[in-house]
Length: 152
Ligand SMILES: [Zn+2]
Image (cartoon, rainbow, N blue to C red; front, side, top):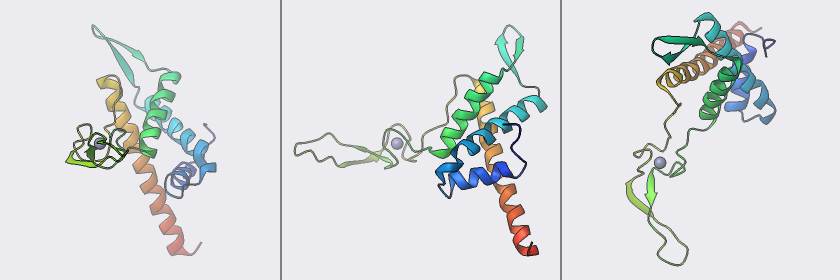
């Protein structure tokens, strides 16, 4: 995990997330785990335990966080409407179901589910990891563009 080269992280994310290269799944997941661990260390993430007590986040917690962000990044489709954005009306016979014409009550018509972690602390850290994924991809895309322009 620590051996993922800088730049290789973004490349693995792009290969898996956009080029749908299934072989890049583990590299992409590991890249997100490495990013979360790096940020947790650099920013000294401490989980509030109540009564003013904080404790350092554990590696197991960081892996769970990274994997939750990764799964969401891979597929944030609303699970209730499956991205249709509308609810379905009940089967009125014949096995056919029609769109309800009203916004899906889960996603309010966005077709996307919300990213949801257990506590406010983990929610904020998860959103941070999602932002890091997008930053890493943008950085990689810029670097690739530079290389192409320089012809090397
Ligand atoms: Zn929905």
